[in-house]
Image 1 (spheres, rainbow, N blue to C red):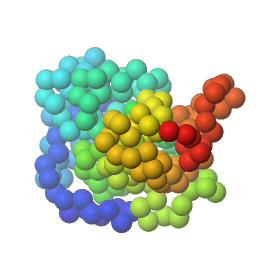
Image 2 (cartoon, rainbow, N blue to C red):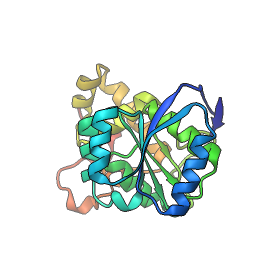
Image 3 (cartoon, rainbow, N blue to C red):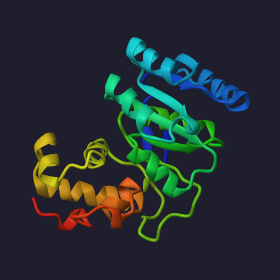
Length: 224
């Protein structure tokens, strides 16, 4: 079992594919994952096209990507099209909160710095396999962000709501899609905002609010 930010993760076997990294990071990842008996690598050193093929063929639980491959939402969306429940982790060099938020908006499950500890990487993999979002940025958190201790870890239902928000769905549409009430959607959305340290839908998507007309500035006041 592994523990991080107050979350205990059971040692279920998780299959992982690795994108293409530089030799130092690739070697470090290989060492970390080979020392964890609950993680099995089923593909590594893969470019974008190879990743898509392997995901479709071997149906891994998690893919770990180089930030250089995720400058646009294209690759995460193509991988999710092939395997909707695929957990996507991006390793980035000292990611700021704004960068990490943008990656989440692209459909990435978690963002970790390239110098993350072995325990953090292993735990993030298990959480991503369960659909739990983890945001780990080196930048000081927003004053609206909560205190540490699970602050950046979303529950499975909150992750579902986040996924719907990424698609631009309204509260009523999310409620219908998830089979919950609009009030429950609002409650989950508020917790998502608080945990990710944002206040508006535009902040969540990494989009300048001035460029999006007719969009409610805060989920808590959106009408069903």
